[in-house]
Amino acid sequence: MSIKFEKNTFQKRLKSMLTVDLKRMTVSPLFYIMLGISFVIPILILVMTSMMDGSVSINPQTGEETIIEGFKNVWQIIGTAGGDMTGMSMDMTSMCNINMMYFIIAVFVCIFVSDDFRSGYCKNLFTVRANKTDYIISKSVIGTITGASMIILFFIGAIIGGKIAGLPFTMENFTTMNLICCMISKIFLVSIFSSIFLLASVVAKEKLWLSLILSFGIGMLFFTMIPIITPINSTIINVILCVIGGTLFATGIGVGSYYILKKTNII
Image (cartoon, one colour):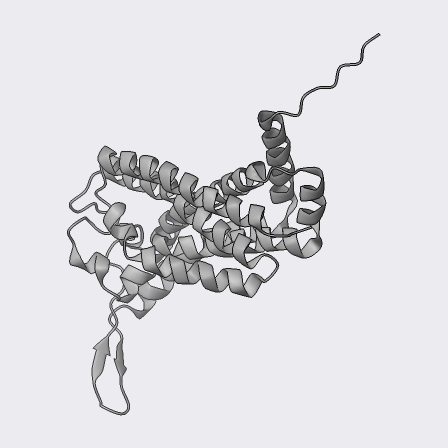
């Protein structure tokens, strides 16, 4: 009687890795805290900025008066129309919008990966599994799923916050289809940022502070590009570009993360 050993293929390893990471994600308090923050942030921003709208602040040294301007409608917190220069300004409405969620995603990815190295999980994992490709792919998928969920919850929170603040839902220079394409583009863009934050986490390993600094630093370089790539009047072209660009960049950056793990003595 012959005994057959089942071959441990890449597909089976990846499925096993994803199952473990998905379970760890769903039982982790960090996951639900991040989702809660994503939901609450737009409500607080819209309500508080509406309360401060029109108020005047005076510089005690120069006596210069500054009028605080809040959001004029709910959709401003989602984005601005392409070609609108306010999308590139550094005022409150252009900074306190859905695009800042990419930095919140960085916090989740960095903590999630850093815990693997700090707890010794990676050492145990890589002792059994020499191929680190499935680890990188799994972490990229988890980061993308979490980031997409955070973007969606921010959108829901923005609608509720707009209702509470009494802001209008008027659509200027864009349609409902443009808004849908904008949100889909932002969701697909998560894969790029998730891969960048994973790369920073792999470089820093158990040093959470270093991974956060690297993630925020690199993220700031791409932050001004987000409103250009995913404006509120996005079309199917923006969606296609984000899908193709997200796939290519995520793959390329993932390869870099793999080689860093491969060349690093973790065990």
